[in-house]
Image (cartoon, rainbow, N blue to C red; front, side, top):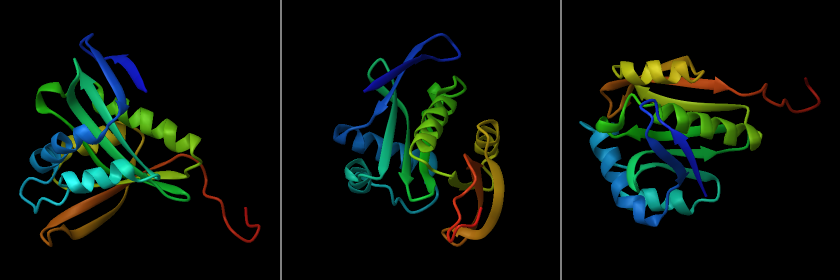
Amino acid sequence: MAFRFADTHGGALRLGFADRTDADAIAAMSRDLIEHGLAWTYRAERIERYLRHPDAVVLAARERDALAGFAIMHFGDERAHLALLAVLPASRRRGIALAMLAWLGKSAAIAGMASIHVELREGNHAAHALYRRAGFAESLRVPGYYAGRETAVRMLRVLRPPVRGNGDA
């Protein structure tokens, strides 16, 4: 199923579920746009595992059938984890990442998630601004998170109050 939307430049883009044929392109985007300078861990085989996992969504943004961006989110009992999100440099600043985050946020809310969590590099100021614009707030900094040398910023977006056990409100 695909969802069409107009980007900020009036172009037609589609959001839809990625499939196995997208695994190589998604892995290459992860290597080049997210994992640059680190060990490449999101190879095609790992992307394919997300594609098959019943508690994960691999979302693809397409322009004229070409992959322009993607996002991978895993759903837990109460919280969702946004593992990866990337948009090709030529397709940035057109609302694609915000559209994917909005779609994933709605999906997480419908699935009953209390929050969405994401980690990003401390020096990635564009990602900080994107996530803040999408309703995320910084929750924690983890020194050495990336290959023991780069600090991660953990951000979260609260969707609803968490359910507490034992009858607590």
